[in-house]
Length: 421
Image (tube, rainbow, N blue to C red; front, side, top):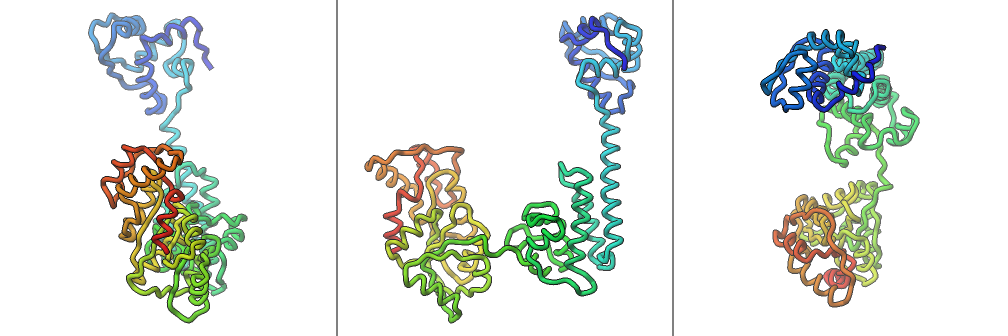
């Protein structure tokens, strides 16, 4: 490797040549590190013009100059630098990157990934099903996610082929499996098919094509898609907290809900419960929705009778499944949450999805609550984050910004419990 003399390096690294080297670096990295072509430099300062005059060996008088890279390379080789343009740029640092070669190598690695995938698919029983080719083409168009190394991509794509072969085995040996069980069997970890994983998206796209349906965007749709392939998603870990639901019906599940309501007991419903329970609630029943479990607890302690569902913060799949079921039954909703910016964001989602009514969530309610807590000497917490407009009341964000007080549901429990009594 050619060494750039220290004296020459110090002069070439001077501020008068910084702009030149930046432009040359960009050109070299884009054309395969070849000292070819020309650069046009404009708006030169006096310092840059003087430095370029010395470097090029000719007097520059204007504010623009055209520099031919082959001539610059030749001049550097015959100067005290004693090395060419590429060596000079590498010495000044950072090392040049042949981006053209890098792109070529990256494309070659991608081609190897898809070639390996095509080979695995072609040697599997899936090659005989009509949707396997569209699946391959769809995955290739989507490409490999950013940051996934080629060897990881090959392994993941092969796992997808293996999983779909198990699920759609032509010999009829497929069976019902839990998603965690299937993941452990094929990836070595029960979390290998968790939501959000690339492998999960690959497999779900194949299941969707096999059943002639679209790839769903929501969690409930993805769970339904797993069931089409005889894979049971986890339906017991996610729950929704409810109180006072009295569905009609004679099954033990409906009876259990009515019994718990009669005894003032809250209920944690799993997705399994919701899938096997027909919530026949009388139409136009008003169901209150709260954000904090403390509201449900207080309602139960007070022996309230009106139904309430708690989102426990951002509504989970279980929460949305219950609310969707109640909406289908013809129930109406009223929502209360925290008076802070994250709380308004969560509320907007509920209001938008279910056309809910505000439950003591107006600007007037907020101002009264601020005054009430202040009069009681309750320490007041400032709002944090950027303001969020409330879809149900355009004045609420203005009032919150003006008073700058964050209020959580716990400070208004007495009023909410009276509404539920």
